[in-house]
Length: 324
Image 1 (cartoon, helix red, strand yellow):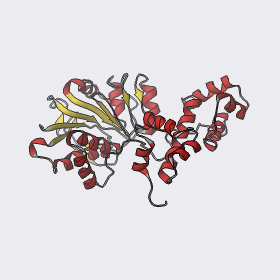
Image 2: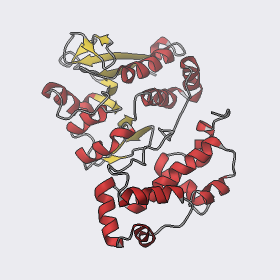
Image 3: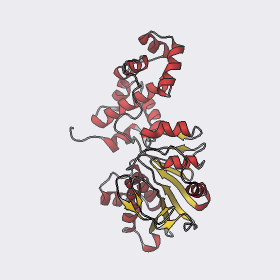
Image 4: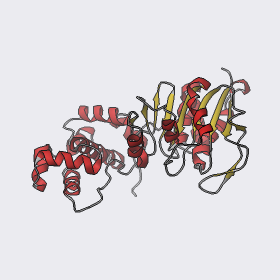
């Protein structure tokens, strides 16, 4: 196979690990590959002046946007700790807009997805970003199909990774797809990371963000659902908890959280099941019942649709073998 030209796009304030993670994956992969089959990663920026990362590290790009005229096999746009509020530099934006024509695969790491969004590359595509910024991405680019809890997402030639270290997962996945799982595993061992992590980007509760007022009816509903996640819930039963009509509850819930009560219930059940799968050896049937899925088959369907992995695969990746 020919040499793979990889470009990572950087700009002032970029997150260093968004760059170093994938770069180290490709660099380590080269130690297991023939020279004619190696990766050639480069940094691309608007200029050759030093760029300061959010942690203070400074990097100098290999190529400017004007110099990076050739085609690349892979182009990834790095992110920043907080998503950009406005469109990036016009020259950068124009260069990114041309990614479908200048690269075989293109995408982003973390909040780099916002740059792709401003370039119009996320419309009608499945994408992800850091879970804390997923709602902002979906709001700013409503035509994007944002997956808030996946490590990385590939939609055709577009690939997007979640927060920070997910860039390593994305790099390992690309190496595995091209050179096989054994090579990806060797690279992962060298980097002392989990190989082929496929889903469940956070071990905490990215779905369950609290409303601004913890004493509000919506917060009480959320608390009720999480405390009784295994119960059957309907819009009417939830409305009765706070003395509201079902119609008003549905409207106020969406206004406060950005999602419907039904969506919140399913996310809460996924979150509870994840914690049980990570922290116990309980049978899948028991986990499914306690978390309100009703059956292991139903839990498997929801996990596969939401996280891209089955409960068995999730447990294999995240099971805690020692008490915390």
